[in-house]
Length: 266
Image (cartoon, rainbow, N blue to C red; front, side, top):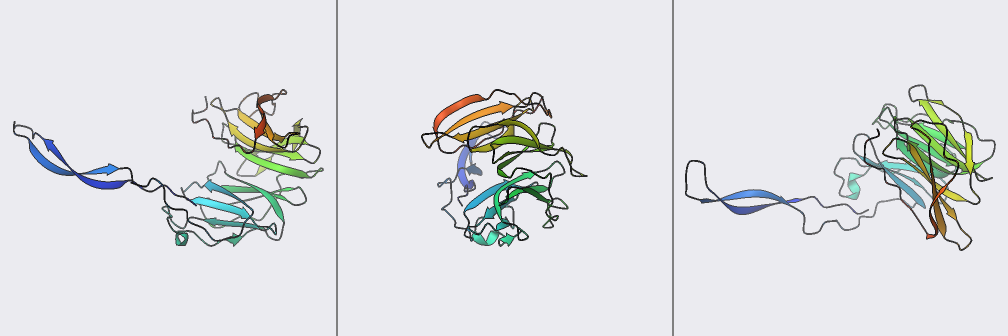
């Protein structure tokens, strides 16, 4: 873990002319300046994990979710807002309830709570969430919809109107989405096929400036590298998606990160 160092306060002398006089005087004032070392040294957190993901929760604290080599799922979070040492983080808590998990997709839901979607080794997507939001109390694992064909990859996103949406791909490379219609009653559309790929892919979601979700597919190519393609919803909160993928790169990619367009949806 590497953290940005905070700004520092330094005292500097400035010359000013007080109102009503013509004689300048020297004063000492506090001034905020960047630190000499912008980032801290690396801090090693506890835990032996093979996969990890981070999420900034509604209260501002960062939560970490991790999977170890035994496919056990764990959670820890900042114990306070400015966590600069290992002691400022909570211990890792095992939260898998005995299910072996291979992937995880945490996201902040429309009610402000952290929602965690995770894929079991058998290819089913399960869901748990904070209740109430910001607490250390979580709901029992539930399913937003059963998959007849096991899935192997998963991503979660927030639509422009605030609703959650999942996209996953199954072992036949068919992509399906599952949209939450009501967060309070946990009402979902169920998995609905809408596209496919020719090989294994990694999926990412985020919304555009116009509120439409964009799906990014990083698919492995014959040379062992990955290409990147994208499609969009036809409108905000739409169940229709573009049919033709737009190629962003056809090879030489190893990894991607999607960052949301900060322009508010219109």
